[in-house]
Image (tube, rainbow, N blue to C red; front, side):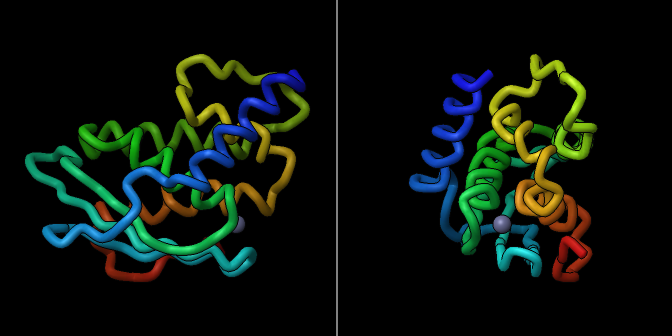
Length: 150
Ligand code: ZN
C-alpha cells in the first residue's frame, strides 16, 4: 500500500508541476469560477460544449497541489465525453473521496481518479480535490455564480 501511495503522490506532483489543459480558451461557450476559501484554491474553467459533448476545456487558477492536479486530471478525463458521462464520473468521484476512510475501496474503474483516494482521510482536502469538479458542474449548468466549497 505504501508503494501505491508513493505512486499516487508522484502522479499528483507531476500534474501540479505540469498541469494538462492549462490556459484560457478563447472560443469557450461555457465558463465558471470556483473558489475554496478553506485553502485559497481558485479555478477558472473554460469549455466548448457542442451536441452534448465536451469538445475541449481548459483551466487557469492557483491553488494547492491537490486542487491543481485534480483540475488537470479532471480536464483530461472529461475531454471528449458527453456532459452526462462527466456528471456520472463526478458523482462516482465524490462518492469515492467522501467514503469512509477506514474501509477498503475497490479502485478499479476509477482510472487516474484513484490517486485521490487518499484524501478520504483528510476532510479539508476533499474540498481541494472536488473544487474543479464542482466548477465543471457549474459551467455546464451556466449558473453564472462563483462556486465555493462552503
Ligand atoms: Zn487546496
